[in-house]
Each structure stands twice: as structure tokens, then as C-alpha cells.
Image (cartoon, rainbow, N blue to C red; front, side, top):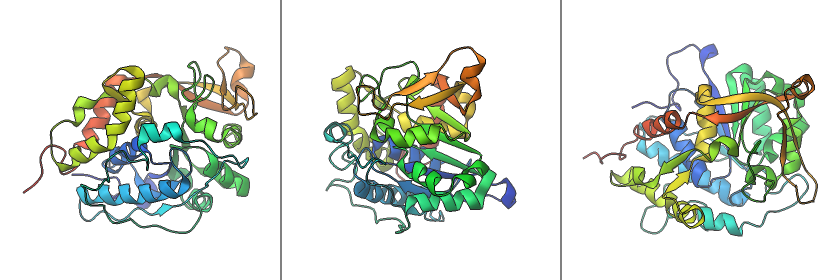
Length: 342
């Protein structure tokens, strides 16, 4: 068994660090499960933000998920610190989460931590705000650090407002959010994460930093059959309970027996960029209060002007089979995926 949470024997300069900013959320938890089972990254921190659930629930859920995953990997895995983040969008707005509750369950974790399963202890937490953690790790890790955002971009935008100069050092920022050629999933124009805080997204995409946007053009194709979660041991059973509400919503909405792996795909792209084909484009965001609020305007025109100013690498095509194999291969690293050990 391997884990990206544990440092290998490589010298310090060769270590790849990742910081995950998330709003758990079912697919956030699946992304963490995939990532922690890989040796590719050493996880510096997990920061949390409002989005699928409130900031308070996101912080608690992340701590529980980290603790749960550690319990099913090697016992020597160190605790990854989790930090609380922004509770409101930059403009002070708060999202109506009625549909999110239908997708992720009332507390964001489906039925994973209901009364029949003993709650894992809360993992290592801190009162330090997420934006400060982002600044600190960008300053400390520099080109060794990849930042993966799986929720609204509020924390990262706040960090950029406080210390924009330090983020030019990071290797890459991978953003799960937006859409180039597809309609939105929360409004006809907007993808959920961007819609939650369009001003933050606008500031991040215009920053000139090395960004890969993993949006609905590719994540909507990252469909995993619910049959993958049947049978097995206690770990697979826990994930089956995690996705139960998520899968029920998908069946009702799309009449499909599968779930969409939005967040796992973004983290997978950070680990294995050749899973997607990208185009370098200007990306702007509608931060108005109008009908197009949260829309990512991706300039796909084949001319020099569209490629020059603050380009973002926008994922437009996906190796579906390659990604699904990559995802499942990492879940198999956990004790209790196939059978429980005696």
C-alpha cells in the first residue's frame, strides 16, 4: 500500500506538494480518497470553503473524511491539517443550498456518517484562516506546490488580495469550475463553483497565474457506474453510503445509474495532465447580478488577441477510460475496498 500523504525517500527539492481547497461534498470526499492513496503528492494542507455546504460543515466534514481515510490506509500516515475558510462570497452573498442538500445530503456526506457507522474522530484542525494558509504555503513551497481548488474560489481570491506576489512562485493552480462550450449546471449560464462566487473567480482567472480550468466540458463526461461500489469490504460500503443520495439525484435528473466525478477529475488532472486536452484561452467571468451571473466567458477564437492576455489552460477533451481506470486503481489501495482484513 502506498500513500501520497507520506514522504518518500527523495530529497526535499524533488517532493511535490499539493494543497486542496474544497467544500465537502460527496465528490470532494471521493477526490481526497483518490489523492491520498497516490504517492504523487505530499499533502501540505486541506483548506475548506462555503459551497456545497456551509463553511462550518465543510470544515467539519473535511476533518472527518481525512481521519476516516487515514484509518483505512497505513497507520503511520501523518494527519493532514485542515483549515477553515470563507463563509460568504466576496460580495457578501450567501447561496441557497436547497438543491445542494438534495445532491449531497443534509450535511454534505450522503449517508456515510449516519447513526449506523461510528463517526471517525475529527482530524487535526486549526483556527488559522484558509487564505493565510494558502499564502504561507505558496511562500514556503514555491514551485513545488500545486493548488487544487474543488469549490468556490473565495479563499484563493482573498489570498491573492493579501499577497499577490507570492503566487507567481507556485507550479500550477488547477480549478474545478466553469464551462467553455457547455451550458451551466446551476443556471443555463453558470457552473456551480463559479456561480457561488463569480467575483472571486473573475479575480483568479485574470491573475495571470498558471491555471488549468477543469470544467463541465470534461467533468460531465467523467461518469462512473454505481455498480463499482457494490460488494467489497467496509471501505467500499462506506463509499456506497457516501454516494447514495448523490446517485439517487443523478438517477432522477439524468435517469442514469452513474455519478459525475467533477472533483476527482480535477485532482487527477493535477497528477496526470495528459488525461485532458487543453487550449490556452482568455477566461473572464460575469460577476453581475444579471441572468449570466457566474458565466465563464472563454475566448476560443483562433486569433492572437484571444491567446495573449492572462491565458488559462482550459480542458476541452477527456480520456474517459484512462481517467476512470486511474480513479478506481487508487481506491483499490484502501483496506476494505475488496475485502476486510481479519
